[in-house]
Image (cartoon, rainbow, N blue to C red; front, side, top):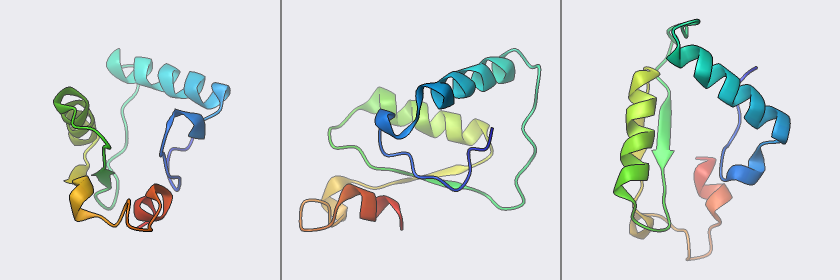
Length: 93
């Protein structure tokens, strides 16, 4: 299963099979059955939430840190979302 090269904007962006594969992978990682290889470049996950949610934001940040990546907080007021730019366009940057 490859997780690179895509944009995850909502739960509808993954098929039922992709969700199944992702949860299987998460379980194997948690049990220590597999380890992720270190990426040659650090991956960055942009966090853009329409409503404030500390637990969700922190959960994503912790998960990304455990995977060796970094997060970038994108407060809605600092983006062009709502002023003509779609969430999808903002996410592709």
